[in-house]
Image (cartoon, rainbow, N blue to C red; front, top):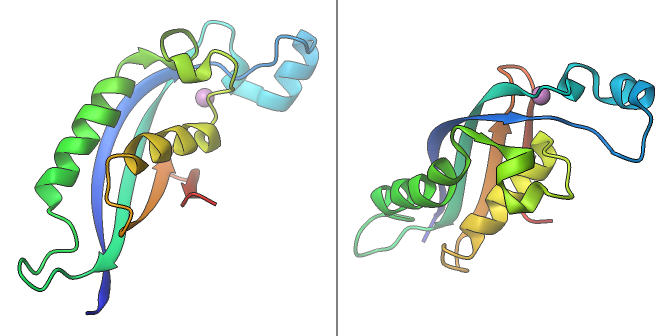
Length: 137
Ligand code: NI
């Protein structure tokens, strides 16, 4: 059967701060810029989850998008939305909540819920122009 990729868009708002506590304030500010604000700040994250696989001959689906929608809601949106990532999410206690690291956390959370026969990839926009992709490499 042909392999097709299905996509689902999602959205969440989160606050974060990028810094390394062992670095001086000046270096933190230099490296992380506005994202180093000690009082935190928010981003409107736009997420695209992509699932690639063979079309199921019975259903005509690669993956039922209503199931994917539910997974993204319960595993990602409910978990990330309106949270302070540094303070409230265990994953970022010792990990900078950059778009790169957030995309890996999202991937890992979804990967365990989606059939291993399907390829998963994540596209995460931190701003309309800055985005990252991750597919488990
Ligand atoms: Ni930021």
